[in-house]
Amino acid sequence: MIEVKVPSVGESISEVQIGQWLKAEGEWVAADENLVDLETEKASVQVPSPASGYVRNVLKQTEDFAMVDEVICSIEPAEAPAGGTSTDAPMQPAALSSETGQGHVMPAAQRILEENGIAASSVKGSGPDGRILKEDAMAAVASKSRPASVQSPTKPPVLETSLTEVESNTGGSRREEVKPLSMIRRTIAKRLVEAQQNAALLTTFNEVNMKPIMSLRKKYKDAFLDRHGVKLGFMSFFAKASVEALRRFPSVNAEIRGNNIVYRHFNDIGIAIGGGKGLVVPVLRNVEDMTFADVERTIGDFASKAMDNRLMPEDLEGGTFTISNGGVYGSLLSTPIVNAPQSAILGLHSIQERPMAVNGEVVVLPMMYVALSYDHRIIDGREAVSFLKTIKEVCEDPTRLFLEV
Image 1 (tube, one colour):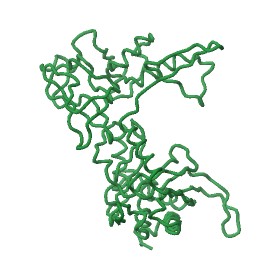
Image 2 (cartoon, helix red, strand yellow):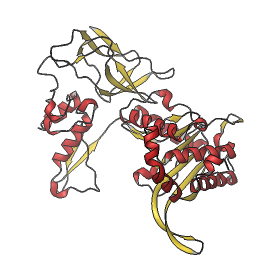
Image 3 (cartoon, one colour):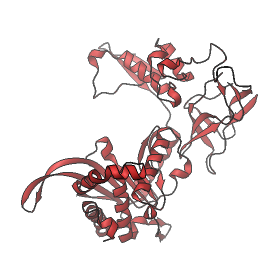
Image 4 (tube, one colour):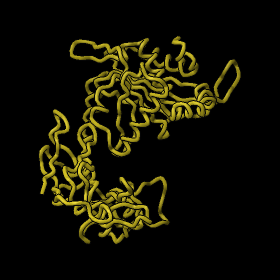
């Protein structure tokens, strides 16, 4: 047997959390094929198999914690079985037929489905290669346990794993689920609380007429896609507008370090992205040197990695400024929290058609509220307001981006 241990994933990281097993116990795995996802304080890391063979002795399950250098499973060296990858015993998680379009059922998911009498063939997997994950099984259990007559789109189902259930006086059940915070969520919680406690945070607002950008996108979207192989989105406009605003107001791009102010003459902009394990903020390096196509392509690559939990710690480290687009989730207005040790964050929101007074007439325009949360210790109100005004002016007249005026 070849032991598989938790690798070193960072100088200061000593503990990880099992994200999900990509191979079930008893399943054959090729050498260097990814075996398990590990969650660290910063990102997800995939551990490859050290040899070809069968997965044995899985000692840690999904959401369990493990220390660096701790053994989590073993590999029994073996040649590939006839017919490709497969499990070697009927007790192992079943592999659904290729006709269903599904992959293997992961151990935790299999246990939940069996306990609740749900056929794996009726569950659609969301994992790699269609694997049925524990989250898929829990969603299937919740869907089964809730009568169709009381289903409500405004009340999400309660997902169950190991939970307590108490009958209420009305005959209904009251379920509670206790789950540990993920490593990434622990870090997010810690950083956000620190930002609230250690910085003098304030938020200023403005609104942007999105018609010029929308018209420009409509006019050039096909040509842009044909030439660059990527769609032209809104984020590249705001990223480049931020570069111009940061150039004019360098304190927004600076940070407090001890008793000093550190001014950065480069723009590493973090873009908040919803991923498979929650919100992450990968960083675009030197945005001042990037084209619109570079920005869109890099964001697309990060989004794909985030959904597959393939972001590396170095993808999330650093950053001098952050843009968060809550509008994709329907947010009309918010006060984003600064990502310390940065000094400011730009919040984007939903685009809504609103009646606006233009030259003495009422005109319906697509408007977006924008917010800048900033550390008042280093950024004055005048600078914050002027910064956001620059964002507004540049986005309402995008030619400014090319003329640098």
